[in-house]
Image (cartoon, rainbow, N blue to C red; front, side, top):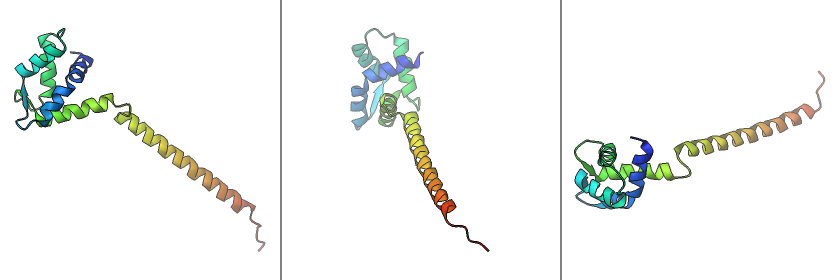
Length: 122
């Protein structure tokens, strides 16, 4: 199944997943997940819902537990965050390049000053 379909399912169910993540018993089985998904996204096929559930049930115990729900929410936030991991890395590299450029400019200025010092004759 297309990862975009899975992402769309989880984006539409993020409130329910957040509630699940905060519950003490921490678990949503396939039937509960399917009912919520069908309510929110009635056009989905059962196999799409099942595959989305399987992708979230990391330990394959038949439940999306609290830890899995929290991991899923982190992934959703990262994927919808304009500063995703890749973008944060790019921004960090850009900052490093700018810093290196400033250091090189400073070294050039120091070299220019050194070259302008009078030469001593021996």
